Length: 167
Ligand code: NI
Image 1: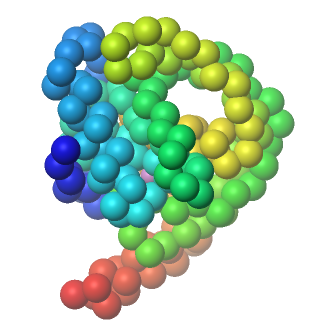
Image 2 (image 1 turned 30 degrees about the horizontal axis):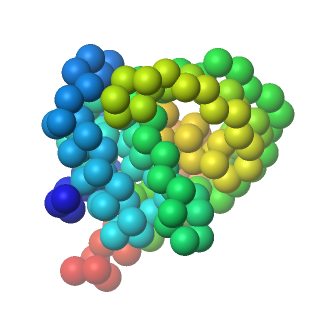
C-alpha cells in the first residue's frame, strides 16, 4: 500500500465530475486500499477518489473509533433520504477548518464493492453525513459550498492562516 497526496482547496481538480468505475480490476482494489491508508494516516473518516486526483466514482469511509470498519463504495447512488441534521464537518482538502453543514439524517445508498458486487446500505448519524460529504466530492462539490458567502470567506481566511502556520 502507498500513501497518496491529497489535493487541497482551491485545486481545480476538486471540481471535476468523477467518471463511473467500469473496470473492477487489481488497480481499483489497490486505489481503494491506498485511499484507506491515506485516510487513516491523515487522520480522517472519509476520502473520495477525486481528492487523490483519481476522478472515479469511488469513496472510502470509516467512522469507527478503532479504524476497523472500512467501507468502500464504488459508483454510489442515493436511493432515499429522510430528515435533516446539522453536523460540524471538516475535510482533508481543507486542513484545520470546520463548519456546520445541514445534511439528511438518514440515507439509503446503493453501491458496488471493489469486486463489482452490488449492495445497499441504510444508515444514519455520522456515517450518513460522511457518505453524503464524500458523494458530493464525486460531483465536484465541497462542504464550503453550503455556507453563506460571509461564513465561507471567514472560513477560507482561517484556512489560509492555518496554512501559513503549517509553513
Ligand atoms: Ni471532504
